[in-house]
Length: 158
Image 1 (cartoon, rainbow, N blue to C red):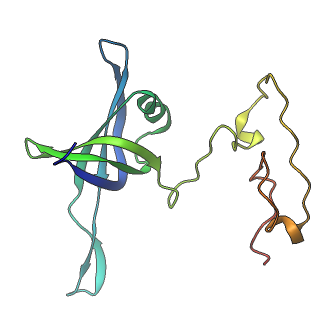
Image 2 (image 1 turned 180 degrees about the horizontal axis):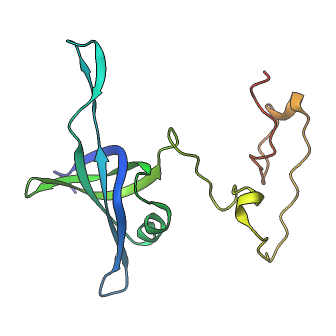
């Protein structure tokens, strides 16, 4: 839509995520992200926290279920969407929500370490074992269909 303001909000989730369903059964989630800008205080020659800016975010569809399952209070996130102001409050109709990897480690189903995954779930097809690669050629090798980040050699030795 024209006239809408696209925005990126980076901050912490404040409170709990509320998950509801519309009359047609579509999931909808609502949560608040508080962005605290950093400001440089020239009089004291140091950085300080500015005034917190709360933004009320809404998401619908499958993203709403994912947000409700993954986000909790104080998780750092990056949210994009269309920004509006109503009753002196900022609202963001969110298109994308992600965990800020500068503050958290995030796992997806395929990269969850076995230690955290718990008992193995039965699968219909066995995954191929990761190809063995020496430390010398790992960096330059072609991407594999199944890459295990936990067992991959460290790049710090280069």
